[in-house]
Amino acid sequence: MPDEMSPAMTAGDDLTTRVLRIIAETQRKDPSQVTIDSSFEELGIDSMDGVNIIFALENEFNINVPDEEVKNIRSVRDMVEGVRKLVVGADPGSDSAPAAS
Image (cartoon, rainbow, N blue to C red):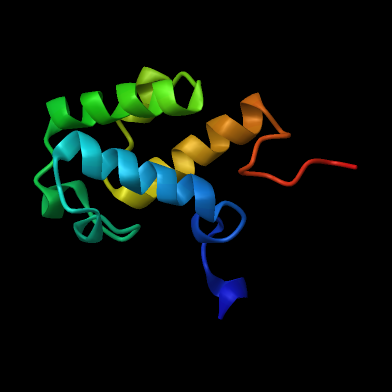
């Protein structure tokens, strides 16, 4: 049921899609291989790959991912949820969150 899904898959499917696309592009993987439930281990993503993905996400979303947050990211879902927090915190009117009226 939709109300049981995590926030990563509800309020911002566009954000999720963009993060998945960036991970696939930076890792030269078929986008169908990268899902919200993929772990970095399953995708063969090591720490250097993770740094490259973070840089690409920072550029795409115009955010700055704090080093202490990077250490906690171990899956695609962690990355999507972390980006969402930063995007919503930086720009509440962005396409990842409904603008207040």
